[in-house]
Image (tube, rainbow, N blue to C red; front, side):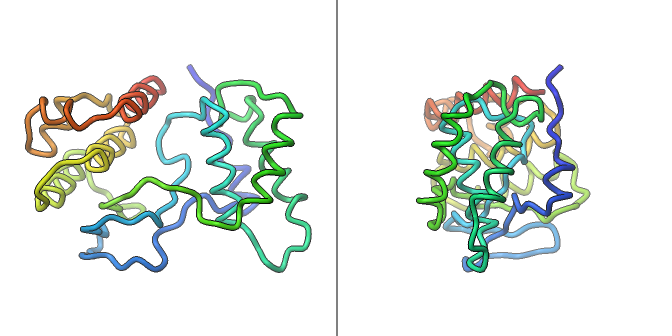
Length: 209
């Protein structure tokens, strides 16, 4: 069984790793969710799923997001706090990554993030964002996602990703049949619109259950 992430350390040090959109306005907002018909890139939600960081590329992206969300213009020494956070996350013993990284490589990564981390990191588009602490069941969440996305004309990868996240958050195995049922389409449609990157992410999410 894989080691649980030490989220308490991040919380105790007040590290921000989640942020809802700040300028994009939802098409529809309820006490359960926000729906963005055109999607939004402004939702950053690290460590939402159980999948761990498995590559240098993914690690760097996570560090870019953390630096971006926590950056303070009034802090003249960003290296001190960011280096501490980056080293904690990159330490395999703390449960965030699946591999050991050489400290020299991590140091180069840290410096690169600080030099280039003032812009919003590239992010996956989201359409349905559930409010924190909602007591919806998995079936209810999938039903809402399917209903909202069903208003569009074509199912795309981002719609499939929404269903994948809902399943993984409830510790359920992601299958093509479950995704298709949620979106009200055939399994063939899901296979046709599921690229290699999403297939890999599906495999990673399931591997951590």
